[in-house]
Length: 370
Image (cartoon, rainbow, N blue to C red; front, side, top):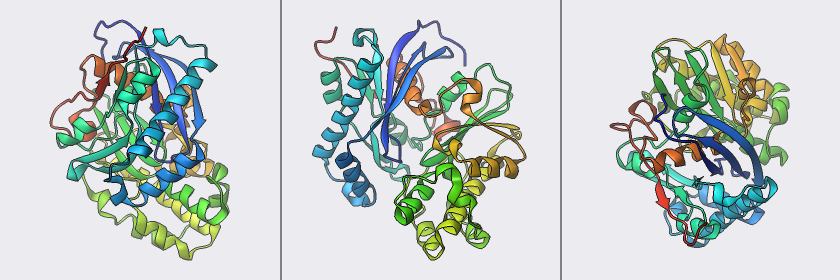
């Protein structure tokens, strides 16, 4: 991407991902084009009662269609509290912050029905922070017929501007997504399938753990390859890119592994995650020999080794190029907020399936700021 002559501005990005375990906050300076300077980033825990209520809503989609005003206020206030703690911890003067990009908490994502919902009250947040806020990043894309996800590709392109192409950036969060950066400037992106969500849910139910540390449980088991092959027959994998997923798409998978022991179940879900991710290459014009991995999945050595072996490619954590893989998405929404202020595209036909490059986000001006 080429710069557009805009000056560098300071922005803060905030996101709580599909794992709902915390609120990521990160600061960048950027022109909204190809210049990006990263600052601090940190994760704050969600208040337990808010996290529990969110999980209850996510597993009952009909509840996500209700007003949820109290929960939205609680989610917003938790995000505001995280930002305030961030400003204090890193001695950031709020008057120097041009904008906060606040993604909110996704509770339902149904792009085929042209519906997506992220809980976040931008007006409430801007008033509390005395900083302009951009939220509701996905709605315009979904309304235009796009998938509304992934939105990180343009940031991936900016942060890796000096690296050799082709290059693939993989985000292994709750749901996996890839950004393929081609040798001729192509940017292709889509959700790949499950990442940490299925494994996390499984070990939480079986062992009371938040995740499979390092992939140790999966490494101790044997994957049921017949089940993996069955899972890979899901119609999602035959759909053309770009495409996106709801976190709860693979309910049947979770039911199927209930018959397996703890280690074998974790191994089977890990194998499925790797196969789903590797299937992405069928959408790449030229194979990518280097994959850079963001998100919690990069710490799962079982997944990382298996993917490198499956792809016969170099699979490395994003830290290899100097970025913090825990806060890439938070940095992304800071970057997208700056683009939104400039009316620049947040998505492309090759990243979300939108009919043309689309800007997005709703801008909430702070009252009495400064």
